[in-house]
Length: 391
Image (tube, rainbow, N blue to C red):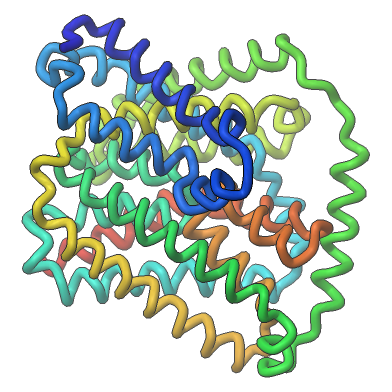
């Protein structure tokens, strides 16, 4: 059993690195099917939870190392991730794409509130906090989920239910959307959608991406990582100071809001164009997810089926609302599916789904997913507060 804090952190990073590289090691049709169903981030969730359950490390002895690393790395990750979100590009998507995105965001939020109203008695005390964190993920991405967990002080045992619910329900939903977008002609004919604007925007974005030939250098990695850690440290200090004078948010929430504003503003500058933001933010994301999962004991998860049922309720409600809006607003299946997965799956899966429709539209999937990082944290916190009204 690992008791040394540094050994614990080193083991988590190494295990996460191995799991992330599995799709490159194991190839072939069967491996591709497996990793489509269980991508590396899902394997990290489950793998680290299993190692925690079998007590590969001492939870009490490694608690200080966990506390010292998780939030600082989380805030650095969130800042670097937001550097990829150029709001000027998002505006180019046009009103219908943005309507589709925010319709997906709002219907997911309402779905969480309704689901909690129905199932809260069976989910356990304080479940609204973990569901609020998961709602942040389903509106944006893993970074938003982790940010809300820190802001609401969600304990790891309760968060484990949300992680399993996220892994299983979201994975099944991706499979459903991949099937649905394969029926684009039938759906678009049914909704009487006009797709020429989407095709034009996708082509323009593809040309812009080709024009960006800036290399990825170690100097870029150094400045991005250094700035992310500095913003994390300064934001935590500012969050603590602001909380003293404006206590209606706690210091963790203020820290998250400061980091978000800093990331969005810097994304509009040349600093946001540096190569390496995706690579570094992904590394930090997997490390933080590994840290979170390393504190979740599967032996205490006897109530998981009710959480999964709650998750399926949310997704079914969301799909019904999106289909109704698609018919009323004449939205095409690309807008509906990618807007939905940009919320629920984020940058890991939305571009893949966009690419199955047209390779030229992969950048659109990326940009829509990045918009989720802007709204996910605030949206998840609002939904969490609404769910708290049910007790």
